[in-house]
Length: 320
Image (tube, rainbow, N blue to C red; front, side, top):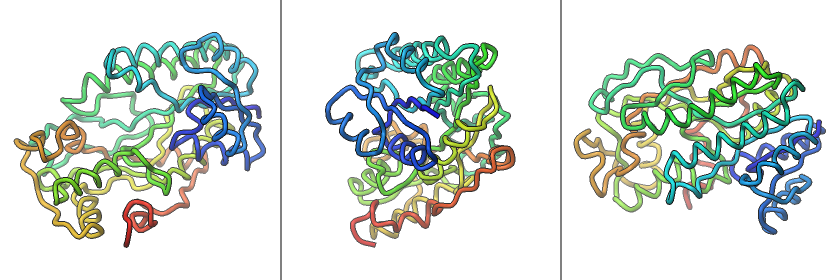
């Protein structure tokens, strides 16, 4: 297949491109700079110069392809326009792809997020009652403080899923909070480690029994390829390997490798300076997620290390 990909030089895309190339697909990546173009070429992709703001260019690239993978984002709009500006730009992007692919049954695979089917408040994190999210769950908010952010993001996901009614083999690959690898430079795990180094301790909310899913980025890449090749139209897929690790276990794993204490942080101080700050609303969420449908229908089998084992990969900590 001739595959057009956005975000090809990011954490996800830099794993997805080699996976596609190794499977015999011809990949073209979007590049807005010479540095990005060089990075794409090094990964084995052809280069199309442009950016996400050029909607006509995106339509043309999609029309010339046999399928599209979209893992880029417009985070650059956050400082000036906030989440609404990011959402508007993202909607314009996926609709442009939909225009180009309508009636073709060609795949459009877009990155999404694992959400919680219930909304536990921060005070409840010591007794999680959230059932695992499944691939059949619609897009839902992830928690009270993140409800608006997740809601506007979910507009994008439901728009992508809705393109199936227009003859696009559209799909969302839901990613967990932590997608780990030896090239992770800005993910949530990196932020947790940096916060621990600054504060001198590794905190977790309440009893730390709320759970997070996780996955290795190479397994994510394999799933994107499978969805591109044979995924059903209008479906969500779950890129999760660890279906729900207690946050306390993650904190203790980080603490052991940094030689720092792991400490419980009361809910009423999570957002104070020196604690989790703006990350408090995320760190309290209970987000277990099932991958049963994904594994059964696509034959996806994660093969890489699980999160707590992959902490020893030599990347996240200078010396293990």
